[in-house]
Length: 244
Ligand code: PGA
Image (cartoon, rainbow, N blue to C red; front, side):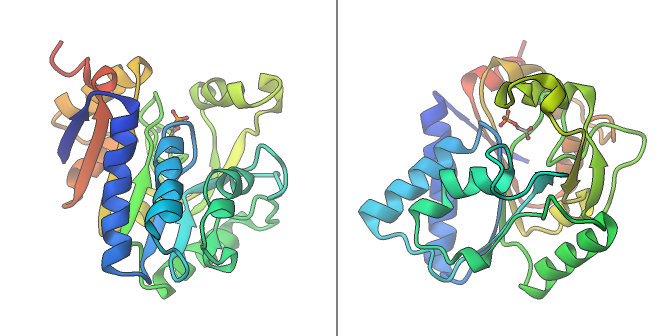
């Protein structure tokens, strides 16, 4: 895993946008993997700016998002589909038919998950995948456990994740307890992975990730240590635990 430590959240976001811009300019028909959460917001802002000011063209880009809360429709303000529209898709020239966020209202998550993975494969596979990291080490909604799912499907959110995400909802009781998430195998198939971490709240998990020297399902992000092309971009606060 390559690591880039930046002075600030803004610099982390610009560095992350640099990777995406260069991949998109290199192949305008690229398939990209996208993430939700607070961390990628700055990357999306920067990509919107580069679209508006530098003509970065998304017209032939295809995207797949990592996850969606089970039970939320795409127009629910807390859904990840809504988040993606608001943060990115509504402000660039991507064809919405080419944007994929798992369907939160699916009645058959297992079959839907298999179909989602198949759609990724049929699109040619993800060239560059953006990831955040949970304070508990999750990637997408693959939560610490004895076993981790390979493919996309139904997952239970951990208590830590429900607590972490409650800030987006009116109360913690409203946070869905299940989601459709890309599995570890689906994520690991991406050719290139960019993982972002910002702020003191991620310092502990980043130090565990970089110092462990081990792969453990109790910190799902450690599986990224097995991938040949992963770049962690984190600000100084998120990195601060590594040398402590
Ligand atoms: P955050 O979430 O960006 O809101 O911290 C990251 C994650 O849970 O993957």
